[in-house]
Structure formats: C-alpha cells, structure tokens
Length: 431
Image 1 (tube, rainbow, N blue to C red):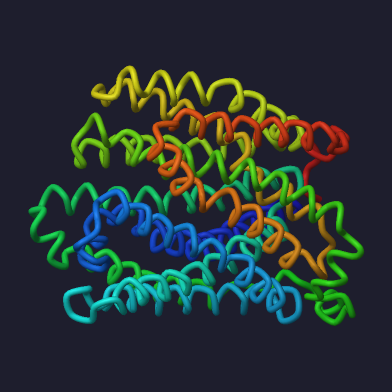
Image 2: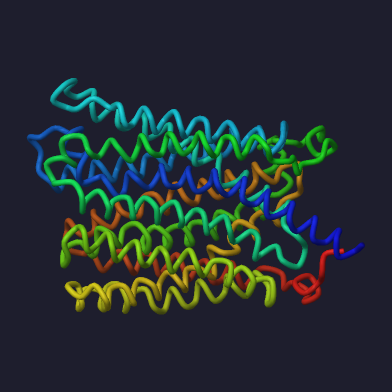
C-alpha cells in the first residue's frame, strides 16, 4: 500500500515537472533564437550605413536591454503567482512568449520602415524579456514545491535541463538551417522561420500547463503579505540580497560560458562548426544537470555553491582566455574546454532555483525568487556579451574574465556564509 502511494506520488511529481518544464524549454528556446540568428537579422533591421562592430554592439545591447524587463516581469508574474497561484502565472507567461515570438517573425526591415525597424526590434525583445522574467521565479518555486523531499535537488535540476534544452534546440536549429540554407536566404528572411516555430511550439506548451495542479495553498494566497514587494524586502531583506549576490555571479558565468563563448570562438572557426561545437557542449550540459542535482541532495546545496564559485574562479581565465585562444581553430579541444566549464557551472545551475526558493516563505516565494534573480541577472547576466565586446573593442578582452573572477570570489564568500544543512535533510525519504 505504501509503495503504491509512493509510486503515485512520484508519477504525479514527474507529470507536474514535465508540464512546468515544457514551458520553460519553449520560453528559453524562443529567447535564445536571438543569440543564434543575430548575425542574420541585424543587417535587415539595423541601418546599413554603420560599421559591423557598431551593429553588433547595438544588437547585443538590445539583448542586454531585454534583461532589464525581467525584474518587471518577475514582479508582475511573481505577484500573480503568489496572489492567484503558480499555474495561472505560468500560463500567462507562455501566452505572452508565444505572441512576442510571432511578432518577432513579422518585424519589418530597415529598408521598409527606416529607423522604426531597430526600435520595433527593441520593443518586441522587451516583451520577450518581460515574459522570461516571469518564468524563472514561478517555475523554480513550482518545482521546489512539487518535488519529493530528499530528492528536491534532482527534480529541481530539470529547470536547467529544459533551460539548456531550449538553448540546445535553438543552437541545433541554427546548425540545420545554416547547413540547408544559403547565407543569402538566411539574410533575406530565413531568420524569421525559427521565431514562427517558437510561437507555434509555445501553444503546445500552453496545453500542457493548463493541466497542472496548483501547489500554493489558499492560506498563503490569502496572506496579507502575499505578492507584496514591500513586505518581502522588509521581512526577508537578507535572503533577497543573498539571492541577488548568487545570481550576479552565477548568471555572469552562465552567459559568459553558454552565450558569449559562441561569439568568442567564432574567430577561429566557420559558423557551422561553431554551431556544432556549441550544440554538443549544451547537450553535455543538459545531461549532467540531474546528476549534479542528486549530488546536491547528497551533500547539501551550500557545498555545491562553494564548489561552483571556487572552481570556476580558478579555471575560467586559463581555460577561456588562454586555452581557447591557443586552440581557436581546433573544434575538438574547444569542445572539451567548453564542456569542462559547463560541467563546473552545473554545481550552480542544477540547484540554483531550489536554493533560492528555500530562502522564502510560500506567500512571497515566487516574488522573492523571481525579482531578486531578475535584478542580478539584468545587471550582470544579460550584459555579459555586450560588456565583453566593449572590452574587446579597446583590445582588453582578457580584462573581462578578471571581472568575472571578482564576481565569483564575492559569490564564494556569500556561499560560505550560508547555514550548514543538517545531513538528514538530504537523505530522508518522503513519507
């Protein structure tokens, strides 16, 4: 009887994780298509009389600007998630992403509408940022609440399985399209196809999310502090600041390793090879998330955070600034070096959402996780490619990696200040 009950609970948990995670995959697929196809649509949407470097800085500046919509999205969807339920918040965010993807596919060119083209690019990208801003906090909260005790790290890691899966599918689609379409076809409008695909797939995810069960209680939704940002900061200010600290370093490392590296390695290899290398690395990254989530269950999330910040701080400069430059034309060595960095990053990504969710009570959890994550992510994560390119434009690219290391050292000391978790919390079975 007990075993049957346990099996039913596990099955229900898996269904809930799949439902929440499917939307997460689509959201991040739609979001990362931008990074994969930026070289093709920037010429169509940005004035042709400016140099390539300035075009790139504007295009990545728009990428960074979308991150500044995330705190607003996190506040809005966190409020909805805490006040009206996690399910309705996740449904609205996936509808918004679907609409903004279709709008991106319909963007008019600079040739057709002049200066309105880059402005509309920014507007649609800000809508995507609003949607993704709402996604992280609510999904992290939902997964932490639905996961079985003693296996929370393992189940919560699927947030980054699908997040990296979204990146992986975007990268894979790039490889396929670059292989089957000519450069002229991609420049002349082929770049619109992935955004149409993203919009359509989001509608399938909407169907899955509409069948999720709610995890927040009526009592937490009716609590006077529910969804209240003032109460969150007043009563849980330390937790809020801690999550911003984690996220600042974690997101900066994440976007440096998984997004900027695409631009960074493209000098020594053609675009198809870059796509293949990135796709293979992201596949490795996706596969190891549950393993690192389970390790977090075994030894505690504090230890995972200490390992992440220490090892990444020690290795990122020799691996990326020296190793990748020395072997810039060797895709196999680049694959091994980049995979190594993504594996180390997994100490953080696999348990990141869970460790943040566990810092807040249920009535402000979606808001607390989402807004603090979005602030750190907006300032340090989304800006990573643009900041790196700015350093590069003044021939100081390696200084960028020193900046990343400084943030990781700060993260290391924040991790040390976390309370040690009792061992029984990670080894207990769910009764």
